[in-house]
Length: 423
Image (cartoon, rainbow, N blue to C red; front, top):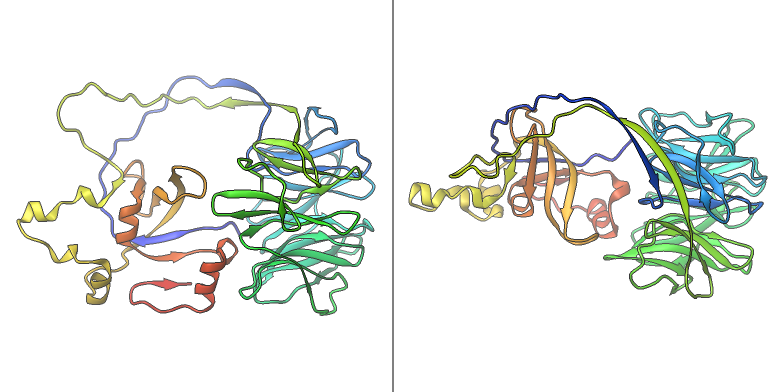
């Protein structure tokens, strides 16, 4: 299931008139040379790079150049993994209501799902024998590592801990490595792929949000780690990325010549695992679509005098002391509000976006979808500033998989507060 964050809060709304669509549809053609949060993988024969871009899988020559789409825009295809014979790709796709594992030939033919369940099946990686896939899934409650035998459809559970285990990678023909967010010792672990309950072993201890590891011919391990506002490309305990490089959180790939293939700064890159400058593999991807007809809203910026403000949530908007001539009981500190029962949950909203000065910094405001419908706020959308969030949000419903280690600890051992809960 896709992650949904729901907030329950006190809010006020205003009415906004609907816009009237008009104009004529028009064709749009773009050539892209960069991507956001994309993953890439080089085929075992060294000839072709597969990448995900705009929810579509693309292939291109290993040295770069024109990319060709091999799936449509409706799959939301992510994180390609090559079969050992370089003939097929496995990937995760959100075609219906959950993430599932799909496979496709390198030329885009024979597209088919290989898992089907009401749970999320994600992050597939092909086994060295070509007969199995390792993937993560929450079909056991929390996220765990599973294997799928392609010929029979047999699914086998590899990990069983109460923590989340995800982003698998084959450490050898018999062992699967993965990220674990276990509370006492998070890091990279490995376990036997036979799934017989063998004890897992710590491969690399590391703090922060980790991505799937890649293993070199001499046993070295490379992985992505995000701590604070920095995203790093780690080889063991050493960061080889540039200080200002934005490394994307996906599995790097160790190449036979000692390079690592990875994605960062919107590009596909290669860099020696021993260190040194990165080399960009340039690509071009042509995208065409029809832009629906619409009439942009006209804003009267030259109108004098006070104008209505719609869809804003900020404590400064409500100056009750000035209106009533005295401090109101509602203006007590939030903790006292909660204990006295003055403030409580009233309705739910879904957070649709966050505005911050830079990635990883504290939010300035949130874009929330109001549960009261489209006739209030800005077509049902509110712009909730962090100050309002702090005063008026009482409950959060958050999927366990997106919690960091600190919040995960609060989930495992909550301290009940009247009016506030962790679910």
